[in-house]
Image (tube, rainbow, N blue to C red; front, side):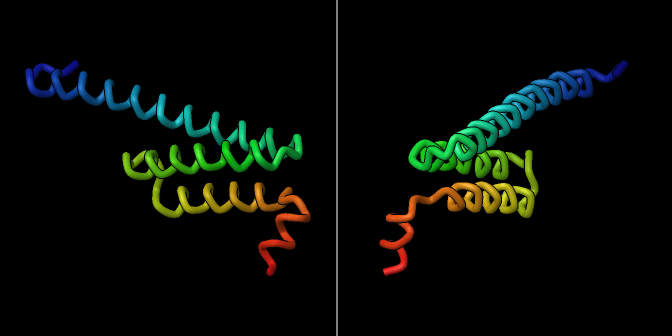
Amino acid sequence: MAQIKSQMKRIKTNEKARQANVSRRSQMRTAIKATKAAVAANNYAEALELSKKAEALIDHARQDGILKLNSAARKKSQLMSLVASIKPAEKAEEAAK
């Protein structure tokens, strides 16, 4: 156990930050799982909405240093690919025009 007063304070601060990071990471993972579930249910509108929320959480995790740059980019890219894979045919035709 730390004997120096400043180190004891730092231990408390680190624990608070760790708890915040655990919470933020959990929210991000839950949002990703919800998006994947909507994709599995073939619900494009819901999947698109949930993916936007998940992207925002991924960006916040990146800003807070919970994720590294490439990890965040990879997660966002995978989500967008999943959502695009169930895009309705009529929307795909309009996008091609």
